[in-house]
Length: 461
Ligand code: HEM
Image 1 (spheres, helix red, strand yellow):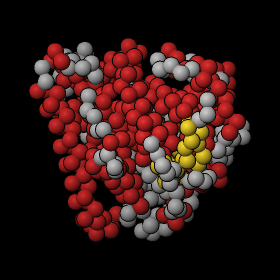
Image 2 (tube, rainbow, N blue to C red):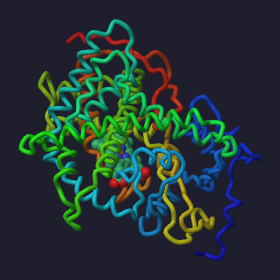
Image 3 (cartoon, rainbow, N blue to C red):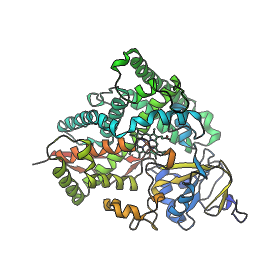
Image 4 (cartoon, rainbow, N blue to C red):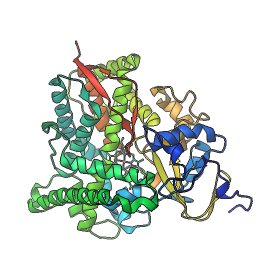
């Protein structure tokens, strides 16, 4: 480590008060992440700042591309778990998302599950994705009042991943409210964020909340264990080619090891968690943007009409919807649905001139990275053409990380983009829509528009 590195305690940031840390600067109706994004412009010059949460965590936050380039070097920094991810690990265990990079189970699952994300497999998932998208359209055709976008996108993405991944049908669009599993998951995820603002000393006062968390966890385990048990009872010749079959039947090509039952439970939960909230948020933000940006909606719709016509989408036609896909990319730039990536130095290291000891968590605040004015001019302007191939090639690869970094980046990226492109294309092809107001962000673990409702009209064609 450089000897002239500055002491971490001198890193700039909002004041830290006894007991509550930087809480007054992290409070706000839109939650901690939006508060951090609001603070970020003050610290552009250093490219990093630090805060202290009431729970006792003291995250260092990287906000500029130049500093992110260093922490995305996997020889120097590795993914670690901090803040909400530690709570989420209590129900997703050593599943892919919440495993430590040096946990052997991560390597095993990564190798066993990789074939589940091949282009060939994507082709297989497409019909099921289409069926669920049609369920959304059918429910929207019947709507007599403005639709609750986040709730409907959540139903769409949960049902899609559960059918494609594990052959389990939540049938969410037939239910009057969110499925009890989703309610349990929603509460457990919220708890992961709420713990940050709870002073460690007061934790014993939250026994009821802890009990609720335990109940929710049990309820989620029960559902997942049932799905696994049913598959095991089905004759092997009838097993679909999905993630669950892969996990139950394939040995790790490197070690010959089969995945344990407990680890399979964690992976199923991981896919349900990682595979739906993020895509639901992406679709909701994009629909709000299209509802309030008539020129863009018209361009996207022209593309969809030209490429899809009245036909059913195929993987080949979806991949031709380049403006639609760029629109999704731009949504993820402004509203990344995984808002912080946490890494830690493998050995003592230096970030933005500050000494960071080995193992000390460093968070990349993705929404701030995606607004670094050194790389993103007029960063608040929604412009899908930032993702035209030439413009993308000209940027540092560290400038845009909605799907994470390196070996720990999102394995479901192509799945998510196909699913979202299909849903968006089918919606704009059929409906005109207006939003109930300007964008507000909900203080959820994975950011989403707050209270967004769309008034729908079948499109005159
Ligand atoms: C728009 C949608 C999505 C976004 C923005 C997203 C984002 C991310 C990010 C940022 C990470 C890395 C997290 C970290 O470094 O801590 C990640 C990991 C992961 N994602 Fe996604 N994701 C999306 C959809 C999906 C879907 C649909 C699936 C499953 C089909 C999925 C499965 C995973 C898994 C398994 C990991 C862990 C990978 C590993 O560490 O080996 N994601 N995702």
